[in-house]
Length: 434
Length: 181
Image (cartoon, rainbow over all chains, first blue to last red; front, side):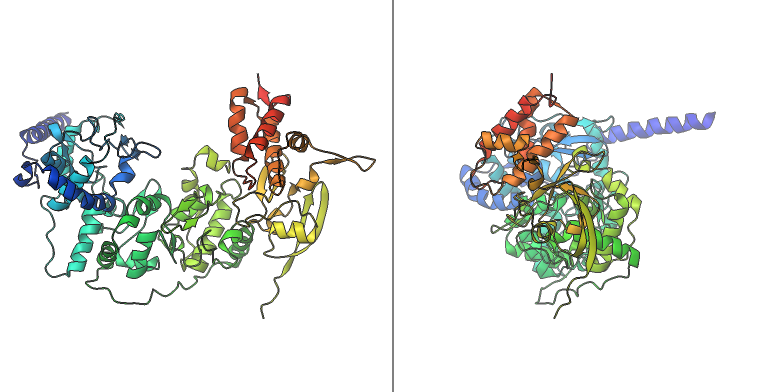
């Protein structure tokens, strides 16, 4: 009888201590210097804004802070999290957005995750990554954002369950997951690698999707960039091993990030938005630096792309059934030999989606299809129909295993439950083949 | 020299008639209809599954009919299936004359088509819509939307969309049982 009482008392004391720590401010570890207390002059804002546009693109602010079809920078984009739905906020310079924010307030929101009035931001806003942004880049971003058109759009209400709707608890989350200090340039590595790290980790915040999270939704830094599951789909391993597995070389990766297309296929699912709103607008030098960092190289030289995958063995009956499906439904656009049609459909031979650890992205495309997508320089890929109504799980298992083995060099390990779990995420319209 | 593709037997029902013959693997349904059966109504437009001039109706017992693009679908995918091409919509009378289907008649009366190249696809789409509405009628105020959704994937380079849309909408509203009270 006594033990539960003691545990309860312990919990109460712990909770009170936590609340005390939170409200005393002892957990607040700002990386924002007092220098930014001085407001920027109108002239400085004018000069900084063009660079701020580039920072905004590299940090991919627009993709989250603009609802599809909504007013630019006015927020409203919903995000399904394990704790409920969160909406991105209005960051245009209107009273509903960041209108009236000081330079210092903007710095603290971006790098400490704390908005004016001490309101904690939810970590859906990647301030743990932006914490590494330079003072100059944050100033430029502030200049750019405050010179956008103000959008009088009210912020949407979040649908978070208790206790996740209690913002003060995020002080404890920050204590666990917000790095105390910011990474300094590594003098052992080249300027290219260091720039790449800054672009990848701080601006691009790639780890927010590609690094797995722990139970409290903090990034597992020991497994940085080794891949994670986002909304049921794999954000693949983008360490040198993972990138090579997908068939990328540093040069083709930079091309892929800049254009959304390469011999490895096109950016699909959430990664299309990343390319569309962010990386295609980045300087080639930054894309090269990002590729150098992700491949952990100090310098990039001309190098041959990784060898095409060697077909993996697959059972004859699987091949026979899969070839029938492929000839019937896929070959018309992707070619009898998986060669694709330029400007219409991507090649499947060597396609990165057949080489990743998980087949979820590929299976999702087969079931639900993909919308027509525009890429830089007038390039375009046509819509892919979904085949949820035409193909049952067994047929998709055969097709996936055969294509992954034949053109992706992967062992045929996809099972019916892998397909079923992706199918469970489809809407009724997808399931009806519409 | 590349070897010719292997042939395989293909049996299906086209416009009510059984068809069975050896067809090389990898032949598209469009080629099969044109070159093997002489049915050239399903049109080759883009060849990439975008314009929908090539669609046919797939009618399976117990299921609602569906539109399938023949330019991007292999002939052998239709093994055992029952399809209707644009040639199969009008009824042939005893004296050899034709009675157009309600959709075809509506297109003629509404001057819906201009050059006519995309028309087979529009006939297919409108017929599939009407068959689906027979199974599941919609409220009157939803008619504009369902007609738009049904015809939307079809491209008409003469831009005759408005008359196609008006003809199908008027037919839906005039046919008993397609609209709920």
